[in-house]
Amino acid sequence: MMIGEILFQHVHLLFIIILLSFRAACGHSSHAKYGRIRCLEREREALLKFKDELVDEYGRLSSWGSHEDKKDCCTWKGVICHNQTNHVIVLDLQGPSDYHYTYPSTACLRGNISPWLLELRHLNCLDLSFNDFNGSRIPNFIGSLSRLQHLDLSFSNLRGQIPHHLGNLSELQFLSVSDNPMLTSRNLDWLSRLPLLSHLDLMYVNLTFATDWLQTMSKLTRLHHLSMGILSLTSGR
Image (tube, rainbow, N blue to C red; front, side, top):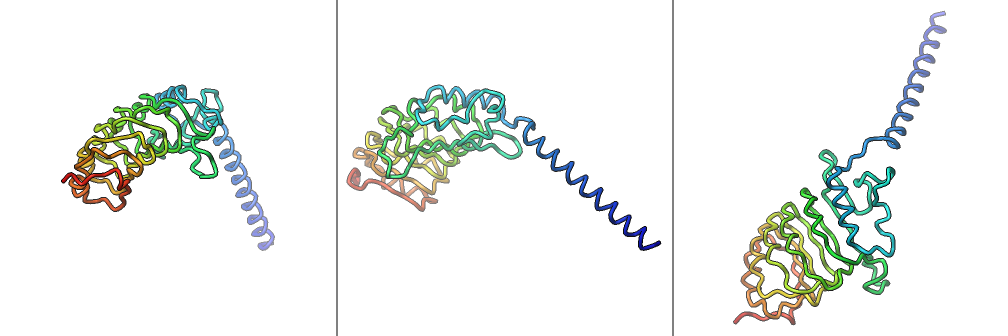
């Protein structure tokens, strides 16, 4: 009788565990489907405004939208949010970098780099490389994205002077504006205001008039990767 009672208790306990597990699984599934939206409304609206100024022929940003099933910008392609604060911290819209593509390809985003990015006040990584910004200038306002640690604007059909405002990005560790041959800089002194910079790529950027490059590089004590087009440089002597 004792054995039978113990066996019955074990079976009963096992049934309860299975039932609770089933309910937990159902609850998890329901939460995943109908759970709260993590994305902050102000940042979602800013991203949609940013998208409005782009031409997306390839539908790369098709997951971005205002419909009910697309409202959580933390699930959008290229967007990463902080696990606790839900602020957008990464915007990675790198185009196709496979050299089998003809650059610029139809998969490139085209258009303007919109100042709506300023609403992403916690952004620490911005990658817009391998896109086509129609020979526009690097916007001065990027220098106001004060939390940026990673900025990649390489292969993006930019031209004009590199704005010295980028020197305001005191937390920047990675900077690439390479392969924009119509970009130029008359001096590189603004780089000396980036004390944490460890990776710098200025390859195929016109630095013909940047005679201070050697002095500037000597001030970047954390720099361990440097790419520059040697033929475009002068020693400043």
